[in-house]
Length: 401
Image 1: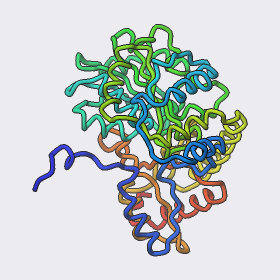
Image 2: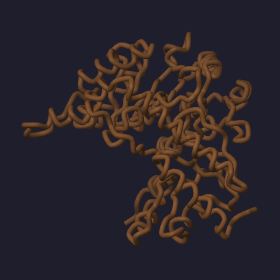
Image 3: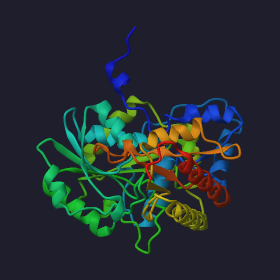
Image 4: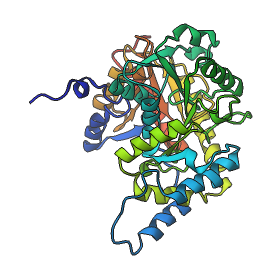
């Protein structure tokens, strides 16, 4: 029997497709340093875990919730989180999603029909490309340069890729994979472009708490005049180190957008119940937790960037947000290198796992010698992972310098 063309041609996850090779290495007793995935090792807030335990004590079954999520969670997000950080929304303008992934997938479906186009800033989160493929959407890219710290070009570059089929701009701020943090001025310019051309602005802000500049994060919902254009995507995964809870949300002042989001939500019935309990509990997390987490990531970032740039032939800019960096490597093909590290290279029984960056780009050839590196390990392990990576780069048969 033959499977569908769309699933056979669907691109595999750049972040996860090499995991079988990692699993095989581990089965041989090899220690693998995971620099490939944004899975923080920082402890989740006690209040999140306690809420799940309390709710499950004496529970006899798990029921559906409202498709929009628990009202307690929606109200809590609005009052305890968003209004606290200067994002003024009402409960009907927020719907709980199955993580940020469903949030941006829903936003793309709401903004576009098959054959339509979305402008993205390259590099971009690879799963945008996956859902664009599934929905028949074309991504049009705005190119940035690693040597310029992925600086956003003048808005005239956005005008050049605009066509009658353009329906939205999609961005991640701070950016996965580059760590680029969009300034207020950049966000205002992009917002004005969207307002001028009647486009949606889909803003994926799941890394909002991880900003390493004196300038605070500027939310797309606060762009004047774009109240009806913006679709905000968020998640508790990174903020509270609750990746496995699979809870996020989609937010918009646009009533038509939220009505459409509800239709999509009803089709998948409801978000994960236990994850919602964890998210409700997490809303009581003290501010000190976020500051301590941020300072820990600054330490990890500084170690990672310094050690990478000391490696011969390697270059990476200083990321100002999230917990990733894109590094240019002296290799013929980063995917071949990443696989080789898992299958062939060992340093005292250890190896390192990086994510090849080609699928974070659409411009042919641009990402083939680049890798995304997640600095989510504790500093001693991160230092050792960098040493293993450097040794692997020196030994790799396809090294270019």
